[in-house]
Image (cartoon, rainbow, N blue to C red; front, side):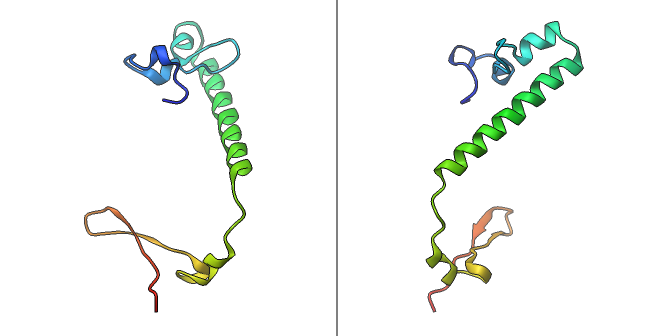
Length: 97
Protein backbone atom coordinates (compact mmCIF):
# COMPACT_ATOMS: atom_id res chain seq x y z
CA UNK A 1 0.00 0.00 0.00
CA UNK A 2 3.07 2.23 0.07
CA UNK A 3 2.44 3.45 -3.48
CA UNK A 4 -1.34 3.84 -3.22
CA UNK A 5 -2.50 7.39 -2.39
CA UNK A 6 -4.11 7.44 1.06
CA UNK A 7 -7.49 8.59 -0.27
CA UNK A 8 -7.63 5.59 -2.64
CA UNK A 9 -6.69 2.81 -0.21
CA UNK A 10 -10.32 1.78 0.26
CA UNK A 11 -11.15 1.55 -3.45
CA UNK A 12 -12.19 -1.85 -4.84
CA UNK A 13 -8.78 -2.22 -6.55
CA UNK A 14 -6.43 0.19 -4.74
CA UNK A 15 -3.40 -0.56 -6.91
CA UNK A 16 -5.24 0.82 -9.96
CA UNK A 17 -4.86 4.26 -8.37
CA UNK A 18 -1.06 4.29 -8.10
CA UNK A 19 0.35 7.26 -10.00
CA UNK A 20 2.42 5.89 -12.83
CA UNK A 21 4.02 9.10 -14.06
CA UNK A 22 4.33 12.86 -13.59
CA UNK A 23 1.05 13.36 -15.46
CA UNK A 24 -0.61 11.48 -12.55
CA UNK A 25 -1.93 8.80 -14.88
CA UNK A 26 -3.07 5.61 -13.16
CA UNK A 27 -4.17 2.20 -14.40
CA UNK A 28 -7.70 3.34 -13.61
CA UNK A 29 -7.43 6.49 -15.74
CA UNK A 30 -5.55 4.78 -18.57
CA UNK A 31 -8.17 2.00 -18.77
CA UNK A 32 -10.64 4.73 -19.69
CA UNK A 33 -8.47 6.88 -21.97
CA UNK A 34 -5.61 4.86 -23.49
CA UNK A 35 -5.05 1.81 -25.62
CA UNK A 36 -3.95 -1.46 -24.03
CA UNK A 37 -0.46 -0.91 -25.46
CA UNK A 38 -0.22 2.58 -23.95
CA UNK A 39 -1.38 1.30 -20.57
CA UNK A 40 1.15 -1.54 -20.64
CA UNK A 41 3.96 0.83 -21.67
CA UNK A 42 3.16 3.25 -18.82
CA UNK A 43 3.01 0.40 -16.32
CA UNK A 44 6.25 -1.11 -17.64
CA UNK A 45 8.07 2.23 -17.33
CA UNK A 46 6.73 2.72 -13.78
CA UNK A 47 7.79 -0.80 -12.78
CA UNK A 48 11.31 -0.39 -14.16
CA UNK A 49 11.75 3.01 -12.49
CA UNK A 50 10.35 1.76 -9.18
CA UNK A 51 12.51 -1.37 -9.15
CA UNK A 52 15.59 0.70 -9.96
CA UNK A 53 14.81 3.15 -7.14
CA UNK A 54 14.23 0.31 -4.66
CA UNK A 55 17.49 -1.36 -5.67
CA UNK A 56 19.36 1.94 -5.29
CA UNK A 57 17.88 2.38 -1.81
CA UNK A 58 18.89 -1.16 -0.89
CA UNK A 59 22.48 -0.64 -2.08
CA UNK A 60 22.78 2.62 -0.14
CA UNK A 61 21.48 1.10 3.10
CA UNK A 62 23.33 -2.22 2.85
CA UNK A 63 25.99 -2.76 5.49
CA UNK A 64 29.30 -4.46 4.74
CA UNK A 65 29.04 -8.27 5.07
CA UNK A 66 29.88 -9.83 8.45
CA UNK A 67 33.00 -11.90 7.71
CA UNK A 68 32.52 -13.95 10.91
CA UNK A 69 29.38 -15.49 9.37
CA UNK A 70 31.59 -17.43 6.95
CA UNK A 71 32.74 -19.63 9.82
CA UNK A 72 29.17 -20.63 10.72
CA UNK A 73 26.47 -22.59 8.92
CA UNK A 74 26.73 -24.87 5.91
CA UNK A 75 28.95 -24.55 2.86
CA UNK A 76 30.27 -21.02 2.48
CA UNK A 77 28.71 -20.09 5.82
CA UNK A 78 25.17 -20.38 4.49
CA UNK A 79 22.08 -21.15 6.51
CA UNK A 80 19.59 -23.03 4.35
CA UNK A 81 15.81 -23.10 4.20
CA UNK A 82 13.73 -26.21 3.61
CA UNK A 83 10.03 -26.95 3.37
CA UNK A 84 8.68 -29.17 6.12
CA UNK A 85 6.05 -31.86 5.32
CA UNK A 86 3.28 -29.27 5.67
CA UNK A 87 4.94 -27.13 2.97
CA UNK A 88 6.06 -24.39 5.38
CA UNK A 89 9.57 -23.04 5.10
CA UNK A 90 11.86 -23.80 8.01
CA UNK A 91 15.33 -22.44 8.53
CA UNK A 92 18.22 -24.81 9.11
CA UNK A 93 20.50 -23.57 11.87
CA UNK A 94 24.08 -24.73 12.09
CA UNK A 95 24.91 -26.95 15.03
CA UNK A 96 27.22 -25.63 17.73
CA UNK A 97 29.52 -28.69 17.65
